[in-house]
Length: 175
Image (tube, rainbow, N blue to C red; front, side):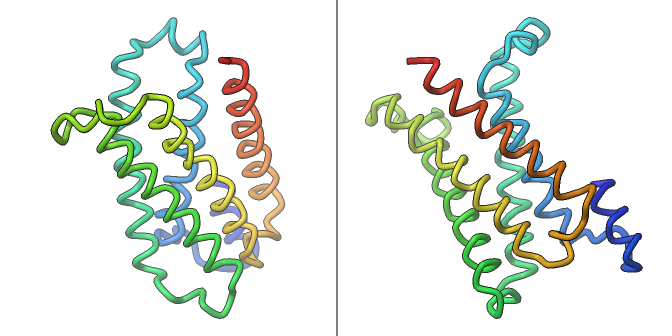
């Protein structure tokens, strides 16, 4: 967020653009949660996995709420930019599908629906978050001012694709 603020400050725009942070904070938390989902050994040694999944659930739900507020604040403002509109829409839709399916079938919060679908199917549906992450990255790239911010965009791209590639590697390594 500091790099984003620096980028806007350096081009003479205002600082603390809270509407953009409503999209950026969930995006970064998606990256962190996706990495933590791979259960890195150094993390498991330090933290209790059961607590880790509780944090995963809470941060995931808070991120969804923040993205929905971001979407509401900017609703239909990007219609003149099809790439911006559709990547934001695809990212939000994929994330909402993964969240709803995760809440219904990966937890016991709502009845006992978690036994009606195989765990493998549940996990594959939950992996729609990878689609959401890539679509959100393309969404960020579709803004002219953001795409030109040198310290911000390379960092976002390196973190995003490092996490996505590592997650895909981890996913196939599990088999």
